[in-house]
Length: 183
Image 1 (spheres, rainbow, N blue to C red):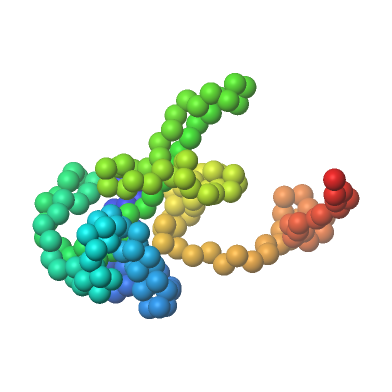
Image 2 (image 1 turned 180 degrees about the horizontal axis):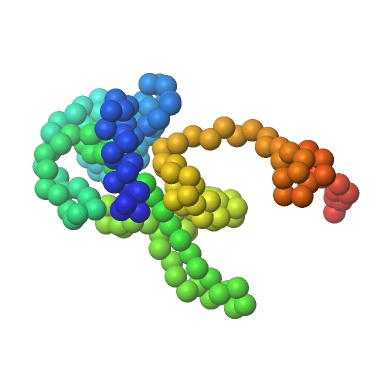
């Protein structure tokens, strides 16, 4: 993750809306507003009976804070809204390894640093099981094709032409649903 993160930071240096790619200013505002409203700062100030305007204004005042970095904790001075944007730059991951025969969990890594990212990507993340294979596909694309974590691939049908991989007619994978029985 540390190496991928370094590459991501490098590729984002000229992106004025970093870390966000190809989204509208309205969508960026929505994401940042949601992060602000679900922050510990918001909760504490709300408990102190601060108004919404006071809370929002506090996110634009520079504050001493310690922030996560791959080289260790950094003491800095920044606005809380800038710290939210800074933390949105970090690539996240989680992994769980289980012994299939017994169901015993052998490893559980919920994220990159719980002190700074208090979200368990294994227990709290709602991902499809198929997503567990994505790191292998992405790592292969990065290593063998020279792709970047920031590259986009168009989601469209792919056809294997006659003669490749022993196909005798052009073939395009399709979802086929047959014999659906309702119980």
